[in-house]
Length: 136
Image (cartoon, rainbow, N blue to C red; front, side):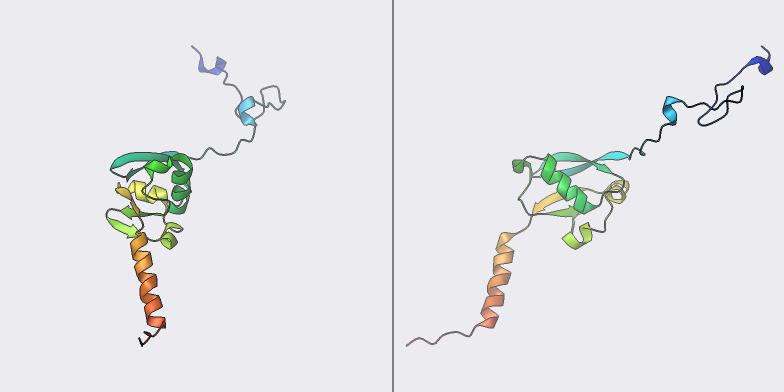
């Protein structure tokens, strides 16, 4: 075949051979499709996952887990992330990228925040503010 006789269709926003402009269906401006990945966590000894986007932070993962999982799949309403056995704070969740954690092949476990520890800390704080009363 003679390569001079082969015609390729005009590409997006290119001129056709006759000089007129062409507009193809795929030329429309569509928003970019975000890449998503499965973010797998271990909770109560069982695996679960949510779909995360490349822009999601761990705080977004927390929201997705609460939205997508059943209550009995979460260790408690107020849970913490343990990443490779290290607990991250809620403050750190707002800075840590979910994709970065996936790229590290890190294990992620959901752990119930200890209400007992919160109550104990409050009790110690209250004890230091009050003086013991004298019995009569």
